[in-house]
Image 1 (tube, rainbow, N blue to C red):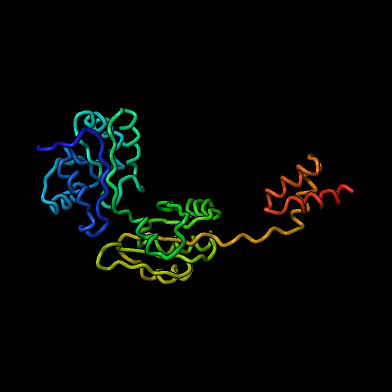
Image 2: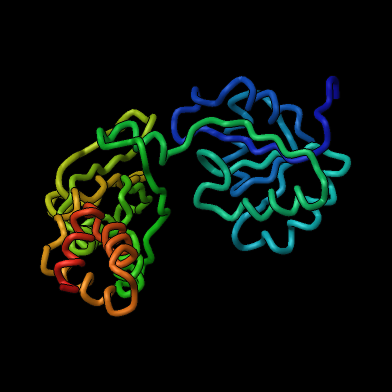
Length: 277
């Protein structure tokens, strides 16, 4: 092969729908890799045909990763190993990070070739705040575990991005409305494909929309952050201040409660002194 790649691991983002989104750099790396680690060889074979090349492929996925990983790490010492997922950026909602971790521990070169990512694309379509966001992957399929997972997300002051399947979409939207409150949200699907869409509304209205008509295709849900927290009741602050005064001097008690409740420290100090008097 002319102009061979340096041995190591190459993390290659691939299209999530439109094959035209494959970057020239990604195509170049795939055409020169000694082996391509793939989720599904049939999917990647179609991508390689699109760019007019044939490369050796090795399945690497949830079910065989533990057994295959040591051999891939060994090959990186003398060969260029490209890692791809079926669509999008590897390691996002898949176990590829273990391959990166072990490659770094072995001292191999690691290169990322960035490109399409459904979570980021969905965020750009949703029209919701983007200054702070959390990607939360897929919710658990069982109701109890799903409720627990949603409760863990409820207090996070950021836009949330989740992946979901069509058959589970309405149930997940309903559970999210119950656990997060009826926030604004967007359901995005078929990103970069002919029927790309982003449907916006509240979580409950979206759950009703899809209850009897589950959509097809790859789906990402984007959910607005929680609204401003209500101001603390003065009675709550007084009770907390009274408790703090049983174990701290007035100045320190005022500082502790000011930080906890977001209140003015000087005003709390005056209140503490009045309580002590």
